[in-house]
Amino acid sequence: MCPRLPSPVTALAYDLEHGHVIPPHMHPEDQLVYAYQGVMTVRTSAGTWVVPAQRAVWIPAMIPHSIQMSGAVSMRTVYLRARMARRLPRTCCVVNVPPLLQHLILHLCTQGKLTRRSKNHAHLIDVLNDLLETVQAVPLRLPSPSDPRAARVAAALQECLGESRSVDWACRQAGASKRTIERIFQQETQLSLGKWRQQLRLMRSLQLLAAGEKISHAALEAGYSTPSAFIAMFRKALGTTPRKYFERSKQST
Image (tube, rainbow, N blue to C red; front, side, top):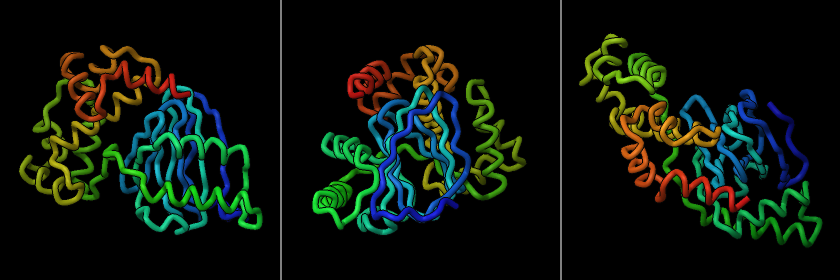
C-alpha cells in the first residue's frame, strides 16, 4: 500500500508508453485518474474498466487495482483525502470529464500539493468538489463473475475473442449448461451473457484502436464479422464512429 499523502488534494502528471503496466497496489486516498491522451485499462477483483481519452476512472481508497496503457498515455491523476467527494460511489466507475473539469485537472497538476492553508488552494479544492458532484458515469465496465463456472466461461470468451467460437462452446468448456451460466451472469454481473460479451468486445476494440490498429483489424480481433457491424456497435455505445472518436481525442490534447 502507498503511504498516505500529507495534503488533502495532490495532483500528478505521468506520460507512459504503450503496454506499460502499473502493478496491483492500493492507497489510502480516493483517486481520480484522467486519460488526457490514450486509453487505460483498470482492473480490480470486481471487474475491468476501460478509460478512453478525455474520460476518467474513479477509484475509491483501499481498492487494490492495476492500470495498463494502450497507446501512448498521458495520465493526470488527482488524489483526494478519502470521502472528501461525498457524492461519488465507493466503487470504481468511469466518468465523463466536462471541459471545465478537464482544465481544472490540468491546472491542479501544475500545483502539485494543495492545502487549505492557502486561500487560492482552498478555492480550487472547493471547485473540484463541486464539479465532482456533477460528473456522470459511463457504462465502460466489464464486471467479473465470482462463480467458478461463470469465471471459466468469461476466461474462455476472452481467450477466443477474435475467433468464431459460440457461447455454447464456452459453456461446454466450463462444464455447465448455457441456461445455468446465463442465470449466474445475470445474478452476479447484472448483464446477460450476450450483453457481457458485447461489452468485452467494445472494451477490447478501444484498446486496439488506441494502440494504432486499423478499424478493420480491430473489428476482427474484437470478434465482429464485418467492420460495418463494429462501427454500428461503437456508435451505439459511444455516440460516434471510431475514427471521429479518436480524431476528437487527438484534437483535445
